[in-house]
Length: 506
Ligand code: DHE
Image (cartoon, rainbow, N blue to C red; front, side, top):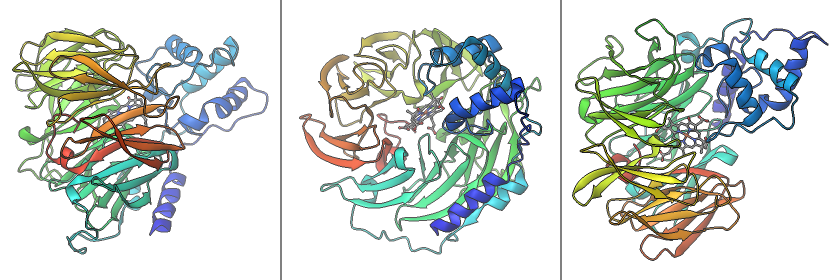
């Protein structure tokens, strides 16, 4: 089965029509091509279609001026893996690389319905596998761990002795939160290179696979388990899949009301609204796409909501009435009432809040959300009734993720950037004070936390190729187990995800 999947991946990759311009020796274009291959291709793809880094084609750069692009090459980009090349490349070389990435490829990359269909593989038809789990562990306390360093996934029992039930190869560079079916039997993954995979957590088998795009942002699963919505950077579109089989149902071009083609920032399921929410990255627009009682293969409607800024990062409050979003360069966050379609508040939040990772809890009787910050060592806590900042909590440095659980008084935040990248700090949700600083493996980057279903243990990733998942007793802060893993990134507890625990993202 693995070889089938690998063959499908290779065929699909080979089929992308990029039409790279043939390089001629000694021309400036050829020199830029050589520089690109040496310095950029490993992350942005040999054909500029994206890889672990985003695509570098003119259609992906409409929000970025050439001057800013050159600056990014020279200085790098905070919060991403983009390093600074200012010390290794001359100003002329940076200029020629900039010119290259704004040059359209000879033929536009395409990934239409024909190719999506050709990539589709259904290994087990719906109903063909028995429902009974093939292990004794509690299926709702499993952890799905993405081991990005080895492009594989581990399924781990969330109860002692924390046995790894299985490991299986994933597509290249899974990213974003996997999405779980209502009762937790199936999990869906998206890879940055466009593959969506459905996995049966009871039988521990890959059920289906499809390549829905060339460069994918993330996926959402409808709360009735009927549809998977795929948000793509490349092509600029959304793809609707049948969640039972991953068969493609339709493609929705991402074009704004004014006719502007756009990448998709992210897609989410808004359970109480019976709708998907999709944000356009290159247009100031967010879409609501109702799916409840609809046959999306035949009829799909889009409600467009205008925004005052580009939605680079966002989250939905627990009622799913409010969209809280930010643009990358902005010093504030905006709150939009999805019912009225109007902005209702602006919240000053310096640095670069990582709203996608925000969590919620009740602080002294008021609902609050807390967001870590990718640029500044801050966790910002905001009252969700008044939309006022309750506190900026100083941390040891910028980080990606904050996580908690309804059964613990603590929220854990990682410090991924800077000299304290080996630290995780613990905030008391009752006092908003930092009460512990943990260093699971001094000198090694620790990141992303997830609790077990009871909130008794916190799992922390050591984000290194020879890394690990370190399991802490969430009450005593003692390490109870270290499981060696290959650059583990996100870990996802089935129960917390399907019950929409306020301590994790959905
Ligand atoms: Fe992520 C989730 C965007 C870089 C690890 N990241 C998400 C989501 C978005 C996003 C929109 C929500 C998806 C969902 O819930 O389905 N990430 C971005 C970026 O724009 C950014 C900064 C640049 C980029 O390269 O795209 C970025 N992200 C990273 C990384 O470099 C990380 C640390 C390592 C990696 O493997 O890519 C990373 N992102 C993650 C993880 C989640 C995620 C682990 C899921 C968190 C969860 O608990 O749900």
